[in-house]
Image (cartoon, rainbow, N blue to C red; front, top):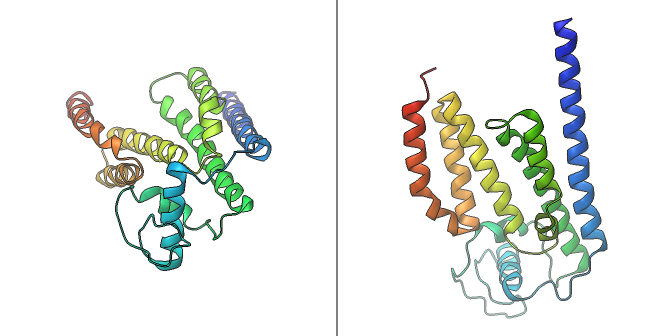
Length: 216
């Protein structure tokens, strides 16, 4: 009887998670399919796009507009996001290219919802973790960010992945998982350097966790 109850609970959790991910992805897919952004390659997006095209076509990290034959390397923007979208960009820019970038960002953001659930499970009950993930899934800002050629979606994905893997590392006391968490934090900082300000309080938190968690 206990085994049957356990199986039913697992099936219920899998069903609710599948439903949650379906809601998250469908909202993002609907948004990118029905939202028209006026001049999507402008301001910051123009820089990221130029970097990505020059990486792909010239193997040069430069924000020089791709039509300029004199491409000069620079380092004004962090390289994480341009390298991510370099697989999807084309010259000249096209609507289909923007949609492809948005589609992959929608997938990453859906995975962020899933990771939010697993991260919340370390601190909350299953129901509260589901509510937390649901609020993430229906967040208007996160949904709308997927349609822009900007760093928000990739950064949120990497930051959430970093925190989840770090939490696992603390509980498992695994050097390998700590290394993976550090790698993810590094990738997040290469996407948006502001996360570097989190390093000092993070180190203090890790020290406290190391003291208070019992040895396995």
